[in-house]
Length: 303
Image (cartoon, rainbow, N blue to C red):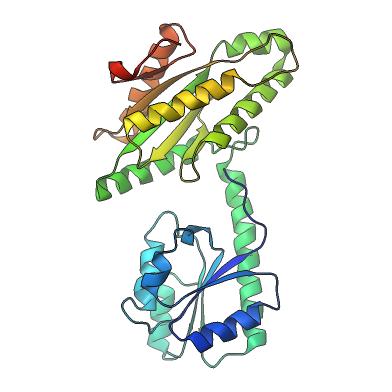
């Protein structure tokens, strides 16, 4: 899980440059990171759209109107939790109802009060911040700060659906620390916890922002790699294996190695996808440990 910038980020989506400039000036009274898009289509092109903490959205825009844009964001796993406030000249009750029906949290009509706008923005950003903290606590493994088992299972189901819908590749890596019970028995559980933390940090340093890493069991880790084929996933797994092996420890001559399985989705269900990858992981352990095994023998090598 990546660290986020503590400054709240806001996206203004409005085709009227004067209105966007006015809202930006109002928000500049606070320490917000503000970006502007001139339409829904323009906003969608922003690769960082999923990172915004709040979106201020007009209704009447060329190409894609605000309601359509709102629906699009709420239908996406990555953007569905971004709070949206409509700021529009459409003041009819039916428009307000439609705005809330498509997922907005607030609806402000033009002309608007700058004091009211700032108050509503502050309130919704605070609610978003508190919600994110609670969500993070619920989804994270407390020791490693990676995602926990239940979230990984839920997210994998979402990624499989997205992969099938867009005809993309989806790969999965599962790791297990070699002889970890011996580490705990020899050096104690406190040291073992430190090992898990360092391995987790090593994984986070290597994977992409769009990859999803979790602690799946005691010393077992799992990484979801969207839009990634088997060869690329294997290279990532090998890079992590090599990185973990090179971690320095306070105990002389101590070394941790990992075994892993790599599999690319071939139409399986969530559980079958995990089971197949887990089977490859245990093949790696049975064949000598400190290696990565995939379902394609030509990729596999002896370390």
